[in-house]
Amino acid sequence: MLGTSWSVRNYGWLLPALPAVRSTRCNMPSRFRSRRLRAKAVVLQNSEEGEAAVVTQAEDFSKDWKDFGRCPPEIPPLVKRLIWEVKALEVELGEKLTFGGPRGCLQGRAKVAEEHRHRTFMGYLPDNEERLQFFSARQVACRILGCRGYLCKDCWLPLADCMCAKVKKFPLWSGIQLWIYMHPKVSNSDFLRKNNSGKLLWQVFGNDSTHLCVCGIEEQENAMWEAFRQSGQGSIWYLYPEQGNTHINEINLPRQIKSQMLECGKTKTTLNFILIDGTWTNSKMMVNRLQDRAGVTWKDQRMQSLSLTPEKHSVLHGLRPQPSLDRTCTAAATAQLLRELDLKDELSGCELGQAAAALDEGLKELLQALTIRLEKSGRAGKLTQYFSNF
Image (cartoon, rainbow, N blue to C red):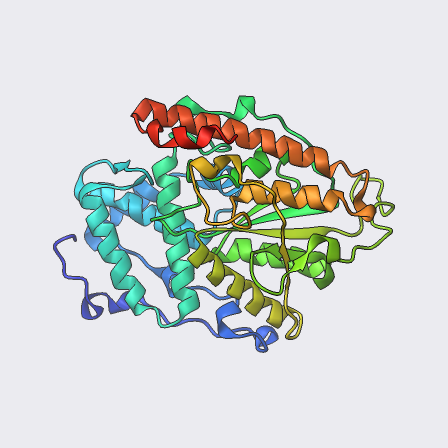
C-alpha cells in the first residue's frame, strides 16, 4: 500500500458525501453544525490488509482517552478511527511504531507515511471547520499513542519523574468552574506537553472543578458549551490580555451567590472561567472561535473577557519567558485570577486566596521537577540567571 500513489483518482472513494444537516440546527453557521466529518468514514487499508483492521480495532484506547483527555471513557469516533489507522502502519510496515523527540512525535518510515496521508486528506476537506476537527483529532490520536505507558496521566511527566505525590490537593469552591481551552498544535503542543502548567489545575483542584477542552474536538467543545448554556451568558468569562477588557473589580456578581448552597454542596449559580492555553498566535484564533460561537448561542452577544493585574512574573518565567507581566502561564494566570476574586465582597470566605496559594506551591513543584529533568540532560545552565528572582 505504501507504494501506491495517493491521489484523488485512487482514493476518491474515501470521501463519502456529508449527511444532511438537521433542520433544528438550520439557523447555525455550517462551521458549528453537529455533523460527521468525511474523515470519520476514512478507511486507510485496502482489501489485502483486512487483517490490519481486526488487529488494531481489538485494542481499547478508552482508558487512555479518559486518563489523558480528562473525559468520560467514550472516546470521540474520529480520534478512535485515527488511532486505529496509525496503529495499522505497524502491520503495513512490519515494524513497531516508534515515538521520540521533545514532543513525542512519530518517527521513521511511519512518520513519513502518516504525514503524507494527513496532508493529502486535508487537501480534500473543503470546510475550515472540518480541517480543524481532523487536524485536532489527528494530533490527539498521535499524542495518546506516543505517550501511552510513558507519561503519567496526571502530571504529564515521564513515569520515572512523576511529581504527583509532591502536589498538595486543595478543594476549590464549588461555585467556580475552570475550563482549560487548549490548542493541539503538535510543534508547540500544549496537550500532553511536559512543561504545560494547565495540568496543575486538576492536580491541585481535582476533576470536579477543572475541565479540559481541546480546540477542534467536537465532543469536548459541545460539552463545554452545553455547560455554558446552563450557566447563562452573564456567568462566563475568558482570560486574555487585550484592549477593552474588564478587570476583576469591575465585574458584577450576584450578592446571594454564597448563600445559594444546595444540600449537595453546590451552588445554583456557577461562575465559569475559560483559560486559553496555546501560543499567542493560536490563542487569538481560539478567542475568535469563542466569540463566533457566543454570537450564535446568545444572538450576537459577545463573551466577556477579563484582564488581570499581576505584580510579578510566574515562577516558570525562567523556563518559559514571557514578554510582559500580563502574559503568563496558565496556572499562574489562574492563581492570580483566584487572588483577585478573593478580594470581591461577594466571594469573601470562599477560601480562594488559599486555593491560589496551593496552586503557587504546585508551580514550584513543577519547576523543580522540570529543572531536575534539565539537569539530567545537561541543559539546566540557561536557568541559572533566573533562579535568584524566585
